[in-house]
Image (cartoon, rainbow, N blue to C red; front, side, top):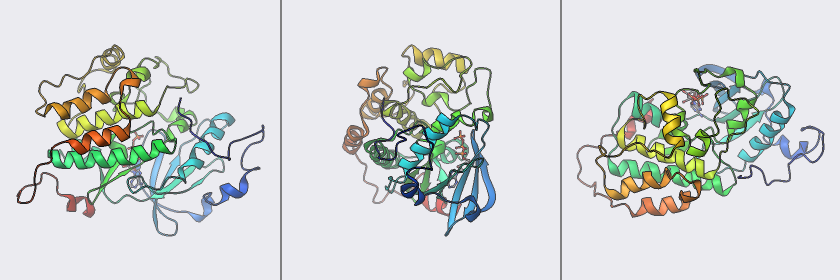
Length: 323
Ligand code: ATP
């Protein structure tokens, strides 16, 4: 299991933060009153993201809490969040601080002005040519490689959590998955307790750990390798414009992936090298999946088409800046 924290800020006795370590925490702790909260941008599984103001425009993710008595989960969340301030990479959203005083838990990040890959691919049906696909994938790989080097597992890498801003990839929502334990009742469940649009990113070992009534005490085995599996699905979305196992019921997806079956690639018009990346990332055994450093080497070796006089680029990056 990948460790989330290798910091001196771990909780060493039964006392809860912020009584100890308060000095080192203070630099990123934001009092809720200092935030000017504006209009809601959208509501996800675990809370609502607002446009806001804190020394400039920011995005404020306010978690909808319904499990405030789970001290262990709260502490785990605080420790995880404390690692975010160590993230400084141009392909990761800028973590500015957090409000950690109950009952309000919020994360403050830079406001992304672009659109998510989800919006580009699934809503606008934008087509990404191979060059653009490779460039986007390289940037995701660089951001994820950095995150893993810092010991942070994303746990929720998906096209909804990847913004494109003037051609630059910005990954959001990393390491926040443990907050699900605090917001469990906020999930929009289907019969299996699994939110829609989430399954196709889950590696076989996670599929096999899903229970019919997933409880917040059941740890799912997220790891660096499960992030790589999720990246494989994003690579597929970029190539095909849709999710793998499209239109299939959750039970069928869980059964197939859990047994080691993969989305067939017969209809995908792409070179062997490009398909090999999918097969590597989607390897059944987590140990067979490449890490992001190796993936970057593989992506760098993909043949590049010369774009110099190409008249049509399916994706117009200037548009994303205007949204
Ligand atoms: P899920 O709960 O499945 O992750 P989601 O990604 O839509 O779904 P949130 O992460 O809560 O849920 O995001 C809610 C909305 O806020 C989305 O439209 C998302 O694109 C937007 N959003 C999130 N972070 C930022 C940000 N830093 N800047 C601008 N918009 C953001």
